[in-house]
Amino acid sequence: MILEVKELTKLFTKHQGATEDHIRIHSVMTDSRKTAKQSLFVPIVGENFDAHDFLGEAIKQGAVAALWQEDKPLPRLTPTDFPVFFVKDTTKALQQAASYYLKKVDPIVVGITGSNGKTTTKDLVASVLKTKYRTHKTAGNFNNHIGLPLTVLSMDPSTEAVVLEMGMDRAGEISVLSSLAEPDYAIITNIGESHIENLGSREGIANAKLEITEGLNRDGALIIDGDEALLKDQQAEKWTVSCGFGQHLDYQVTILSLTDESSRFKIGEQVYELPMPGKHNVKNATFVIALAEKLGLSAEEIQQGFRELEMSAMRFEKHEGHNGALIINDAYNASPTSMKAIIEVVSQLTSKSRKVLILGDMFELGEQSETLHESVATAINEKIQAVYTIGNHSNRISEAVAAHSPAIKTRHFTDKQTLGHHVRNELAADTVVLIKASRGMKLEEILKDLVD
Ligand SMILES: CC(=O)N[C@H]1[C@@H](OP(=O)(O)OP(=O)(O)OC[C@H]2O[C@@H](n3ccc(=O)[nH]c3=O)[C@H](O)[C@@H]2O)O[C@H](CO)[C@@H](O)[C@@H]1O[C@H](C)C(=O)N[C@@H](C)C(=O)N[C@H](CCC(=O)N[C@@H](CCC[C@@H](N)C(=O)O)C(=O)O)C(=O)O
Ligand SMILES: Nc1ncnc2c1ncn2[C@@H]1O[C@H](COP(=O)(O)OP(=O)(O)OP(=O)(O)O)[C@@H](O)[C@H]1O
Ligand SMILES: C[C@@H](N)C(=O)N[C@H](C)C(=O)O
Image (cartoon, rainbow, N blue to C red; front, side):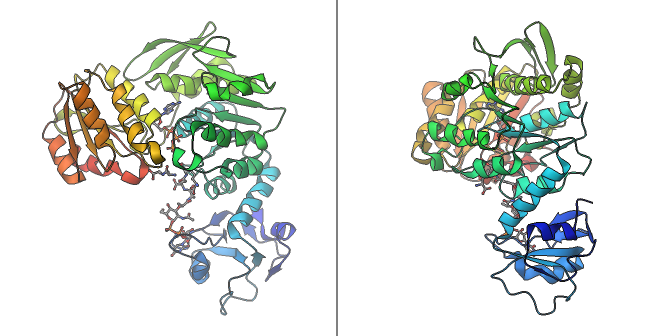
């Protein structure tokens, strides 16, 4: 159970029905299409539906109480004893309920934001903290003004540490999440170009990410990418911990070796092994080590947490392809920084000699979109044998590659089926294929053509 209906009267003073009863709420329902016994129905007005139209369904699916936007007529047939709490905005009320519950459970709160690596770092933090604490984390990518409160309201009352991914695509959004979560520790993974269309510049992105300090517990810590010039000023703050490859950082990391499957690195004299490739993941792991040491975890506990990592889907997700090829689905999302980072990893793979990149459009890059797409070509060298692109902007990648490296096969496709069939015909045991594009491309749909 997370709350009693009676507790909600402290938050929402306008209510009807049996609101003073000790009715137990076990979860929050935002979708009347899914069963949720003993749940609080929170009807959200969305782009396609207004959930206020589905109260009857919600009750059938197990709702025992509901929040209700006061400008919406309550259905006549609503049982008179059904507890209903009237609010101005159900999304804001959801956030209020989450804030209340978070204070009630009172776990250690870790907030994670950044242009890239939020989900990866969230999964790493949770994997390490659970060696010492009962830990709850953001499911998938539930990282916005709805997803974060739902994450909080889905944690068990016995939770000792909660790891919250904080996403944004506009200024002011992280501020809302930080004020709600009041993190004890905040991590900013990097400043890339994601959503730059709405932020105007990388400086704008940095300022938006720094909103995470607005709710930050000053007895805690802000853990940042110490190699990022736009965050340099933060290093003067006493609560800031800087991580990276550069000199004079609080946690200066040195890579010892990178393989297809793992990374070895050291901080000071302590050596760690991470079951993930890529120097960007070494940096993500360094944020985690800095946090874990603040919480008193030992190197052994940290290393155990790394070993037990459970990654979210579509982040360097490997599949056995047709004819024994390796297919890497990294298609959850993409921005120039993350696309270059993963291309470098694929370029370094030793298990496959033939490397094929399938790259789709990256969205929300604004006026710089063409240039930023073209910049991805700078990460593509002769270690790559073929670059296939799809979408309205990614042709700039394949065109730039064709111009600077004619030995690399390139082609731009206009539909996924033709692309999938073309690549399938090239698959062999020596081949690795990377799939990467923005979420809106849903480029993972070509997987079915590449795996048996
Ligand atoms: C509100 C909601 O959860 N909607 C989800 C729903 O969309 P759908 O179109 O079906 O419904 P509506 O939103 O129009 O309807 C409103 C509600 O009505 C409910 N309902 C509908 C029909 C019915 O018969 N009964 C009902 O009760 C319905 O359930 C709604 O609650 O389903 C979609 C498909 O599964 C979901 O995609 C949609 O989720 C929305 C987008 C959402 O915001 N979900 C959050 C829980 C969440 O965290 N989603 C993450 C992605 C977050 C994200 O994009 N993060 C960005 C950064 C932040 C950007 C920020 N500005 C923003 O706006 O998000 C990032 O870059 O990471 C996820 O899904 O992974
Ligand atoms: N520190 C980093 N710097 C650059 N790229 C990174 C970093 N960490 C992860 N990536 C790359 O970014 C991509 C997405 O990783 P992840 O999903 O963890 O980030 P995210 O911030 O949650 O992304 P999104 O906001 O798009 O969901 C992957 O391609 C991964 O290789
Ligand atoms: C996940 C979502 N917030 C996102 O990043 N959207 C981009 C623009 C996309 O749809 O690709």
